[in-house]
Length: 125
Image (cartoon, rainbow, N blue to C red):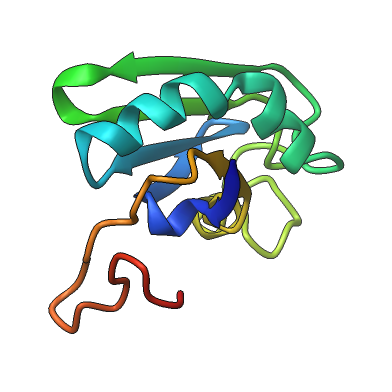
């Protein structure tokens, strides 16, 4: 096994849902989705956001989109307008999650993404 940052396997979006945030993680390919289904658990997400998420983390699978959706309950310090947090809408939660290190098989090659080929198989990230 080797480690890759989540952003080598997927992209993500996030936003507020009341007093919680919603983080959608979309794999770039089928192999990446299968890795994420097995590795990116609600417990791992909650641990990654320790000190931010005070409630449960729920995961919803959307295989037709190669996506996982996470609801991070009690993570915003009140709803968007009631919170005193700098990021009251949880917009930075996607980028924070994309920095987690994921265990992937040694033979997995991250797909080329972006118009510049920012990540190429066998290349540096």
